[in-house]
Length: 480
Ligand code: ATP
Ligand code: MG
Ligand code: MG
Ligand code: MG
Image 1 (tube, protein in one colour):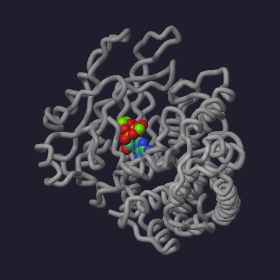
Image 2: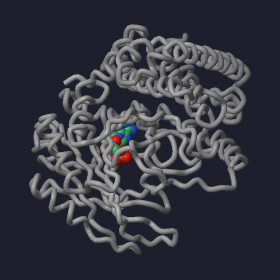
Image 3: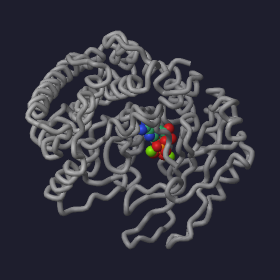
Image 4: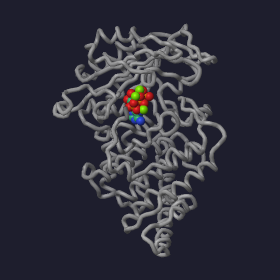
């Protein structure tokens, strides 16, 4: 099933169940100072859940562009290393604002997955909130359990703790238990390796969460206590690219038609082949992912810049350039050339990509050109440093200076040094980095709710210190 059809089937299904289908909200939030980018399908509806304003319809469904690169949801470090976390992804969702509740939400999710999409029931697992013995003293979600029991054998209903199965918007406001649907698409041989054991939420790239159903039934009051909500709500989110992976019978999101046209283009431009080597594969995944994030942001009006959301976008693009530079040996701008195939592929569902294509290409090309210049300059400086050093170890201070003053990332410095048979004093480097961070630390603490104000130093941290090499040695799978 083509991805277009996967998306259309979802929306048609909920349309038939009286949902109003709305377009994705822009990913860049302008009117919510607590959220830099939309990171879940419900974010654009936050005010309705808080009781400020009324939705056009009490049932809504859409496919929302989400970006998870900061705050509570920061998946950036996984991207490229695993095969199912993206920076930008689509979240398919259905909402009930004080209308239907658990019974319908569960029954419809099941009907859609197993009847409309035809997914084999035997490879699905679900989780239910187990309750908590903390101050909230919550009972297990028996209601959800009983509903699932009608649909799936009990040994495939797993209990989840508060961290995974209780959703809160922030310190206050609507919250409630959730049920997640996971899928296990391991081959029989792989299952045999672990005696067929169910591996929900464990380290395997083919055992992934696909859909989260949140049942908002409480309100967290200012004093921290919970009260029942008079109007209960449903908020669900399903990862579109993961669903495509399942329905297209492949083992990685990157092998779906959402990504393959971009990957083919990268192969052609860089004269490389996907699936031929770990480092090239990671680089190709990183670039194919990041070009989407950057292109969609620019289409939404957020250009790369030196502060706030623009800075995040700039760093994402630079991360992609670095991977291309280091592992695909691409020393001139090329990422902008992927925009054409991207807009052809996604332009129907997201017309803003087509409308802004020229701008997106120009902006990316300019950014690439200027960052590659920085990289070139860094290489020259590094050569100079090497020629002035007698020992085979470069001082950490010099490497820090390259990073701090010239924006030359230390992992790249490390790589180049090692290629030339040098090392650097990483202890000294880390010390310098620590000192700089302490100097820059802001007074206010960053919290990790869904809605938190992002500070510049956090943004710096989220992407500045990803260690390229450390990751390359291991393939990272889902965290427990
Ligand atoms: P995971 O545990 O896999 O990180 P999550 O619990 O953080 O997922 P939710 O916040 O529940 O995800 O979001 C709803 C759905 O969105 C998930 O079930 C998953 O299918 C999808 N999803 C979440 N994060 C990503 C991502 N970074 N890239 C692609 N899809 C994602
Ligand atoms: Mg996550
Ligand atoms: Mg999860
Ligand atoms: Mg989840």
